[in-house]
Amino acid sequence: MPTHRLSLGRRPSRRRLRSALAAATLAVSAASATVTAAVVLSAPAYANPHTYGQDVSGYEADHDWVNSRAQFGFIKATEGTSWTDSSFPRHWRELEKKGIVRGVYHYGHPSNDPVAEADHFLEVVNAQPSKPGDILVLDLETTDGESVAHVNKWAKTWLEYVTAKTGTRPMFYSGWNFANEYGGGLGQYPLWVAHYSKAPGDITPPADWKSWAIHQYTDSPIDQNVSALTPAELRALGRR
Image (tube, rainbow, N blue to C red):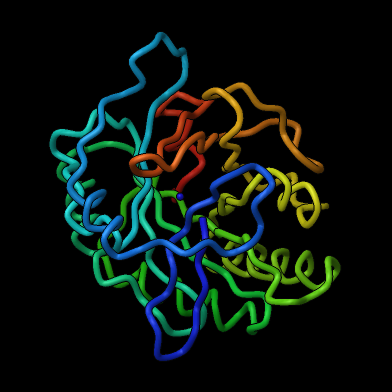
């Protein structure tokens, strides 16, 4: 749903894990983003028992949800304490028209105040119409040079704060290795994990998680995912 790097006055980078070991930021060219923006993907061609979904950000501002066979879609809304993805409202409306499960994510930076970041996320998300079943997500894949203990505490603070404010337990997104190292004690939050060296759904959960909810298995030509849950079960993780 990665490599995002926020620098004030610069365009945030795109969430793209290019391997299960990636916790570092990778550059994504504007030309590549243009090519992927209009890509229409079908569900995996081979038999797969899982629910298929896609996730996008401003790099796919014109993504064709109408013709997508995705059964769920996730969208980037915010990053840091002030940046907002301008494509978020359009994607949000398109997913409402399509009627599939939808989710929205915030890209976190542990060098900032977690409450300030959470407030920014909620302000932007709450400015759009919501409905029961909308899923909230923390995307955490950078340390900003902070320690394991700091990053872990930061994540807990953000997740607990959003839960208290919304009455909804957010989902946690990260790469498998990052989640395994920094995700201790977060097992109560549904897991969306990126692991590109594994076939769709063929993963074991990292750290303290007993199960996974969504597996992001590739970023080519856009981020593609499968869920171990049915659409109805995914909605049950969202807003009441």
